[in-house]
Image (cartoon, rainbow, N blue to C red; front, side, top):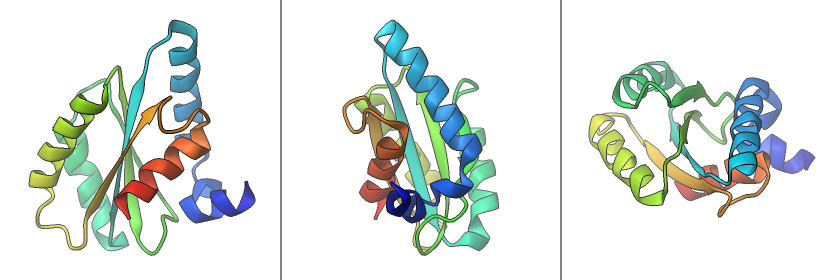
Length: 130
């Protein structure tokens, strides 16, 4: 677990992990799902990318900086009630919006399919962006 947390930067992500856990609890209780999108990019471009993502996504979506993401900076987004097809559509919009961000890589994970625990879900999203 410690190696996984170090790799995703999760030791710095108390707020993100708390939000993921709260959403996972809600989804377990009501038998629902949600998606996580990660953006890995150069650290100096994360702030602007975060603001642009926030403007593109729904009011119900959460956008959080991923401090300590591997070899870069990053941004994570939690998309409640969004299946894989909906998340892919959001990723397509984000990819077009962030086309000018150097080395931008988007990743996706769906709860619970890609990880029943929040750490494994975040890791799956990060890995799919690599």
